[in-house]
Length: 251
Image 1 (tube, one colour):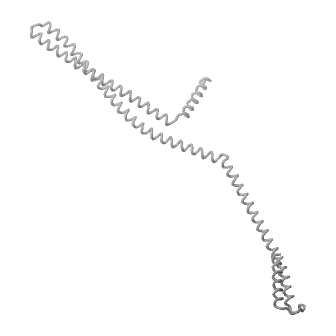
Image 2: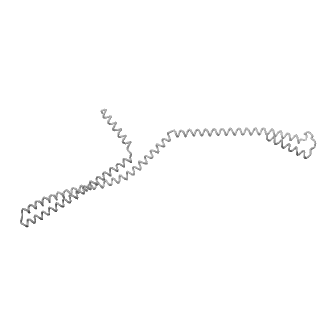
Image 3: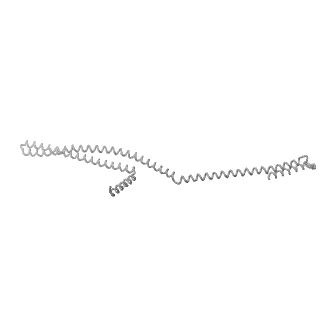
């Protein structure tokens, strides 16, 4: 195979591929139906023209037959008048018109066959056109559905493979990290609070011990003897004791 043949084949292959890729099913189907409609119009015009020709031929045949009959009557009249030469001439013309009528009748029969075939073709084309219109609507609907499905799949592919999903994954990791930090801070805060509570209990225990010891000294029998007190003094001592207790509780 020569170089130019190989180049030609490559060019034709690329052109065919380009045409196939650029074909829009909806446009192709619309154009196909339009072409069939134009063909049907031409067939109808051809049928109408054939019928008109047939009608014209029938009129010519009828006229030729009528003229032939008219010359036959003239031949009879001339023969009755005894003019044989005129009768012969009339019969000659009558034969000419009769031959024309016969030829036209034969032509009419041929035209009838042609018109019949054209009508059959027209009816068949009308049926194909009706079927093509139905299929066109169906195929266009299927093509649109397939195209929409293809676009949706392409969008899903882009969503699954582009940086958007990666960004979501990064943000998910960031949120998890923030949640972990928050939980850790909460646990540390809880530990400090418990530590403070234990320290308060420990310090509070010493104060309570001191208060209990002070009470014991005041009420024990081995406490140093004190002069008898009056009810007023005892009430004052109780008030002072309450104030001291309040101060200790505050500390």
